[in-house]
Picture (cartoon, rainbow, N blue to C red):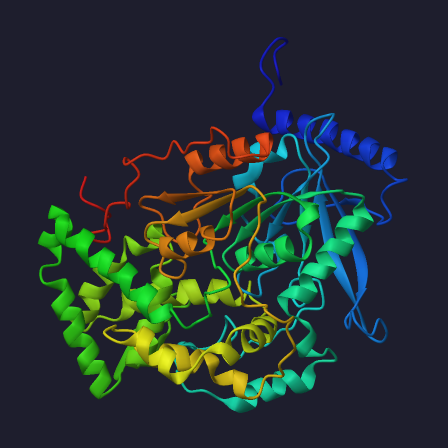
Length: 494
């Protein structure tokens, strides 16, 4: 029972705010109905705490022929909290390629923008609830042996292709951005504020080029310019991130003491794996049931690469590597299985290959692979194996000059994590060359994507609010550092 005058319980306050916000959203929705041709209704979306409106918008799969199969795009609008919001929403363009915007749990990072602007989420064709091109050769419940098997099985990908009633050639970025603009028009928005994350930065750049008059501002987080061919630069960029991890461990007294000579020991382990894979019996991280696992050099490096994305995970890597060099593979497998298991639930692999095999693979030569892999531990195999399915995957067509740099005067905020293993700061600098009104901010101590950091959330909000870069400065200072390394399973040294 609540005493009169007492502050309402937090949960009640949240419910009251939600009820008021929903009432405002419905009122605003009905007042805009004359402009809005896409019907939206109240809905619940997992991971979104605010009142939400959902609908679908049908597009032709073949946008040029404008006949035949149609795709129902999932559209979600999270109405602004303000009673009189700004007219242009923030649009999230998700990563991957293959992630769905409505299933990407990062909306909380845009809370300050959401106060005055709608958030628009559209599952890109081939993802989420928009005709997903699923092709999961190793589902999350697969055995450890299957998940760590590095054998390429062409029949798995042919089976995926045979099961589609879709044409995988029609799921490229330029076509998807034409879908997005059609949704924009159907919702009655004149302009958009783009927020691209990882592969979504490519999508944002393509939208900027195709519809420059429809973009008010652009945020590119984890910048993948048109000159970045996936996965060509992976060996070099991953090696840079790994070298930084070793360097930081060597300079950290606790880490250096706990794991002496870690770099040469890992190099020796790689040489051992190169001669013959390691076979081990390891308890499954979820069930505890022992399973036999074979770990090759390629699989080991592939899993290690995934562990470098987020410093909060990478803080465990020296400890995992130390145990692996001593023959204890259970911690390394547990960490790797947790990462890959989660990713398999969020990526439509068919859409991934529809993009990569059309937009990247045809431009990657053997000479380029050798050049990018030279002197790295990751080597050529990580690139060649990822491109292997493109030998059978149908390829679409691209506009002439598609891979040329995007030139734009749209105000653009470029964000890079210092420790990013896939889109390091050099790629942000590359994109900046042809974006005449841009600011590039490198965030210390952060990996792939930066918006989880409070000072970046403030910077994004200020940028979108004023719609320009004038006077914009990052408050992210040198106090931002990599999280302390775990020296044991009890945690970092206090």
